[in-house]
Image (cartoon, rainbow, N blue to C red; front, side, top):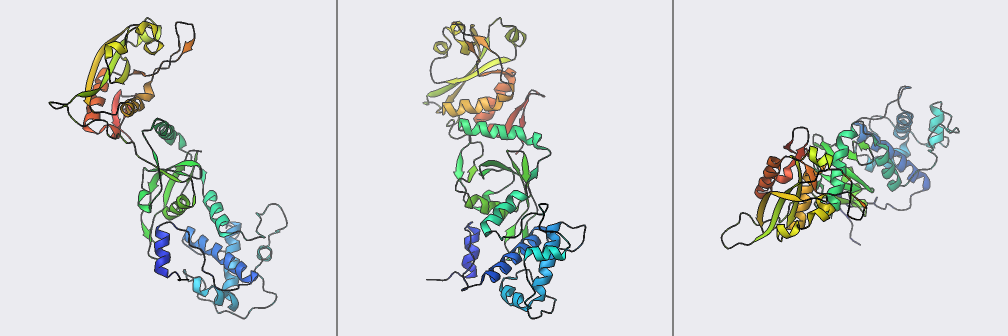
Length: 396
């Protein structure tokens, strides 16, 4: 069987393929335990950019790693075993001595050296070394914390979920590291994740590019995971996906030219209902829809249709578009004005309660601007701000 070179490993990692440890022959359980313990110290150094330190003000695990590293440095057997994998040169600077029968790397013994009673329930279980996959999964979870400003992100998560439901956004299999950028959305571990910040790029010990991210999750937590760690998590997760940006898609072919046939009309209606809420907001309350047929036929018998608030309507504006995807266009318009959708319950002609949709508290001039931005293709960069009654650039 052909052997993988270091260059092969680097390429596989770039593609997000998990690289298993190379077999080195029959290692004893003790040797496997020593290697696993050293890998935990290495991950601490990767995470914190320094070796673990002694001191009562340090976390118990950091103190444990510090004692463990001292022991590994001092034992010749460990130096020989771990030397080829010591990429951070953690074993340098201490003269090793031959191993003695009494020298053991058992976590309980190390804890006792720290004066910690490892038999109590107050210390996390350290007795059994976990598999690499378990440790990585636990490490990913452990780095998450409560997102204190989640309320600022919550509307974005709600909107993304609506976009997925309406088809404005799609999910795609995750491909490459280049897809992980600020403002991008993913599904990992069954949760929607948003890359809120991307830190300054740096080189790892293997001269590979990496960055520290701030990732917000839809359960109100966040993590400062490394970019490559998120990449590996997405590749390991069979259900991991990338969420596409808002895709206007082929809504229309452009301006209507001679010989073209208009295939869709955006219409704006105003209600003549005497309902108190409607009457109080008549000048800014509009129904926005898209049709490929006759508007007159569409609004016929409006007074019998709860869609039209059980009242006659007047057409206040129409916009013709050529070769549009009507469903996608209508979903896009409703997404933009969703924050000001009218919440009202009326009775249909049988006395059943109905909640009409597609009625929005938005001035006509804003609708006109939205249609103009649909035509020039910039609408996906904007969202409606009820506070200023205007279209504002969306925060990515």
